[in-house]
Length: 254
Image 1: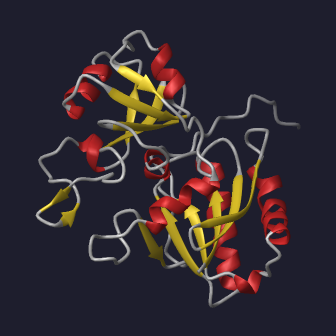
Image 2 (image 1 turned 30 degrees about the vertical axis):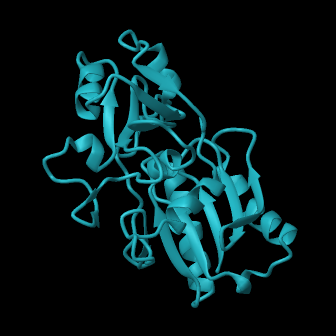
Image 3 (image 1 turned 45 degrees about the vertical axis):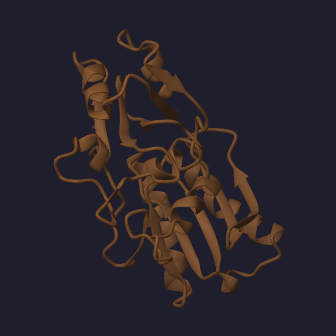
């Protein structure tokens, strides 16, 4: 199985190509917010470096978000365009935050984070790898009684009182490992203290999308809670925030 991995949910554009569990080539932008200008060029570069043709691909794996509205749109449009041009190509999406949580070996709960707007981060709690979500009666998942931070990404507003207590109560432990680009904001927040530990990765990259794709049930079948195949006509990325639109202050001519 040959997969093209596209990470456009975060500030930095990243592309990789993998065969099975082996990453053959990867390119990650050194500047932020360059998705529209870098993405297709990076795809060409990794395919050339891996000595592959686009027709060799079996799947495009896209980072599903949450993340920047504009950059998610760029990634989704590019992935859909490839699937239209290559009808045999399938589109698979993975959670950006789960990709971060599965990147290392941690003890206890992991809070995966991505920067949102000023004073906010996207965050989700996971249990330690390899059992990123706990198994209940043989089924992978989290009981509905568990705090929403374990169930799906949440917008954590660091300007609101009690955000720190919400995380620690949800995790049920005195120590939480924080990964991702939002870690620095938590570290700088007034309520941050020794309860939070900070670890790599500090930024999501295309190669990190591979772990959720390869994650299996105990029965040896693909786990749908960590990646899923989607219909290109109906798929929309996970926008946790609506687009931020500002009104022009320029005066109209005439």
